[in-house]
Image (cartoon, rainbow, N blue to C red; front, side):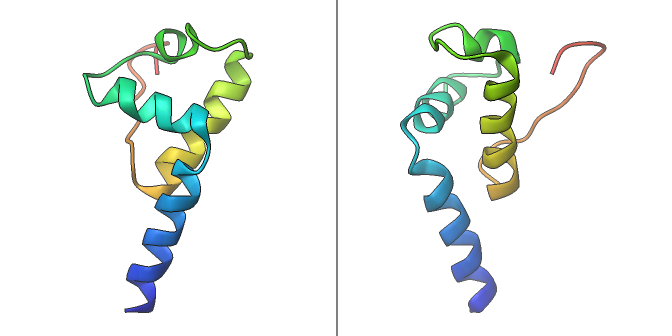
Length: 70
């Protein structure tokens, strides 16, 4: 039971940020590269990657690297 609570806590914490919620909403329509995810935001690619890392660690998204595209 504790593990489930920790997993839910991580998911809710990840979704507490509006940028990450918008990223999840975009990804719900299909896969996208980091560059595509970054388009509507005025932040650097490293910042977008940090947000993706939080989402991935919470189990909400999965990333895959194909050649040079993540």
